[in-house]
Amino acid sequence: MNPQLSDVPAPSWLGSPIDARPLFAPEQDALMATLRGLAPGDWGKEAVPGWAVRDVAAHLLGDFYGRLGRDRDGHAEGPGFRAGETLEAFIHRVNQEWVDACRRMSPAALVDTLGLVGGQVARFFETTDPDAPALGVSWAGIDPAPMWLDSARDLTEFWTHRQQIRRATGQGTDLDPRLLSVVLDTFLRALPHTLREVVAPVGTQVQVRVHGPAGGTWTATALAAGTPSRWSLAEPDTGHPAAVLHLDEETAWQLCTRGVQPAAALDLARIDGDRRLAVAACQIVSIIR
Image: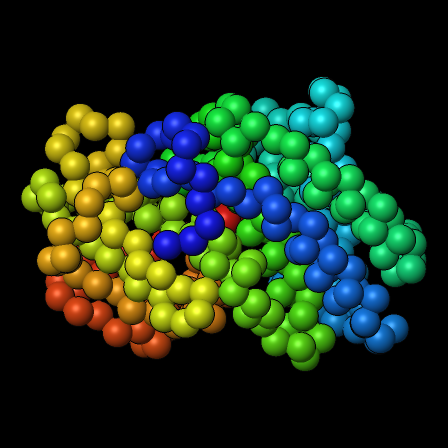
């Protein structure tokens, strides 16, 4: 389906491990080329609601420092949860605090620092053990997650923020299949968790087919009650799915990141078979909201 690492054990229902390690350096190079190509007026354009291009770039810098401090350097200090604060609320709060603090940095200083620190992040990921326990991935329903999923998740975040900057400045999505194929493969690991409340006979299969050079087919199979996940990406494809959700590449990645809402994605999709199951699959989200 996509570049994978076949000899690393993993929770079986997540499917075969993904080896994203060689892609952090190319993604970093693409980010720097994008940022260095911006005009002065581009930095203030809205990239996502409430954040300009400069804010998204600052957020990436915060992600870089956080990963190096926590996982490379063993640095345990930093913001903590407030009483009663959910994970999502905590993440949104500390992200906003960081972005607010970085508004005193000029775009030139941001680019210079992202170039320095981003290269270190790429080198860090190149040396990771894919099977080591790592940060949980809430949208895949696993905590702790294996490092291969944690690192692939970070690659998708870096890639997505770069696309937000590109789209805000009129450049459109970078559909380079070398990166997008792994991004889509990672996003679709949310499918079993997405279907966790969907009841179907054991063995029922739901497929998502993404059409295009970076696309592929992901098949979730209903398991018996009492298993760690009610649905699995690891079961053999029978060739007789109960439902197939067909998406193009652009719609697929934007659906997973909520750049496109499920109702709008369904208008752009084609459904074969059981519409109820396909609509359930279209609720997929592969970010923390």
